[in-house]
Length: 141
Image (tube, rainbow, N blue to C red; front, side, top):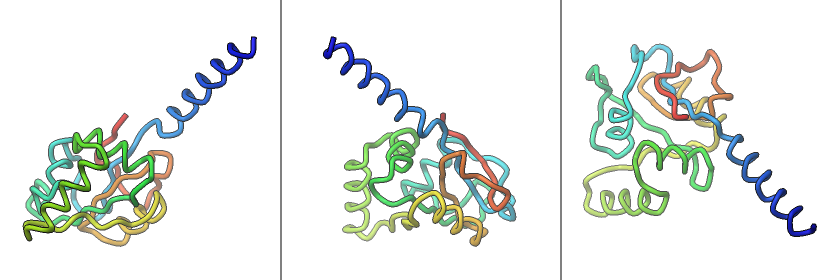
């Protein structure tokens, strides 16, 4: 009986944690002129392979801080790396002088505030955090 209860609680907690971040929204400043981005566009920007939006205007990517679940989910879904691989990737680029990693700007609120105040920036937040101060250009289920 006790074993079944523990198994049920484990399944329930897993289900609740999966629902916590149901969807991540990639956001830009509403004045940026960007209406949508593809997953490939976003990956190229966050991996330092592109320094411009597809329309040619400059871009400033912004990450959430290390250890935040949304960051881990974003990096795995879009950049196809786990957090350790992503950190090692950027460490190598920085060491060789070939790139500068995206700025870390805290949690959902910090990223949203940064993007809302910078017309050339792109970031990501939990979809529930989106408001009129930013524009959604891509969603990660």
